[in-house]
Structures are given as structure tokens and as C-alpha cells.
Length: 68
Image 1: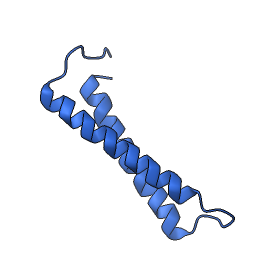
Image 2: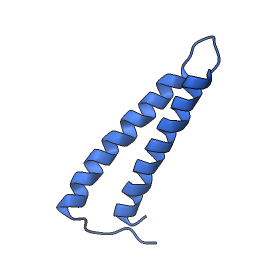
Image 3: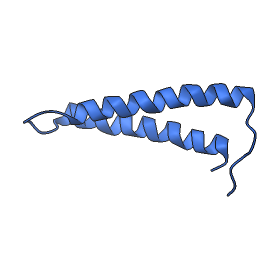
Image 4: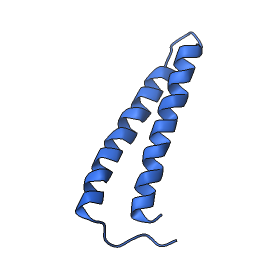
């Protein structure tokens, strides 16, 4: 599949929001993983899984807009 050469202003605005969503979801997941000496408990593991899924969803949409 070839990447699109042009995106609309609306898609550009959506990409800005999606990039922020990706960044913050990834950051929340990374922070939940850094538990120090203790392992991931149920709540932290659930947070990691949820935030990872949120970041992946944002990235899928970004790729869709770019035609990748």
C-alpha cells in the first residue's frame, strides 16, 4: 500500500490529537511497568494492557490516515 501524498486539514488536526493520545497512553503504560522491586500487580498489569491498547488504537488510526 502506498502512503497518501495529501491529507485534509481535518485529518491533520486528528493526527495531532492521536499523536498526543499515543504519547500519553505509552507514557502511562511505561510508568505502570516501572514498579521498582515489586512485580506488576493486577491493577498495574490491567493499566499496562489498557494503555497499550489505547496507544495501538491511536497508531492504527494514524497509519490509516496516512494510507499505510
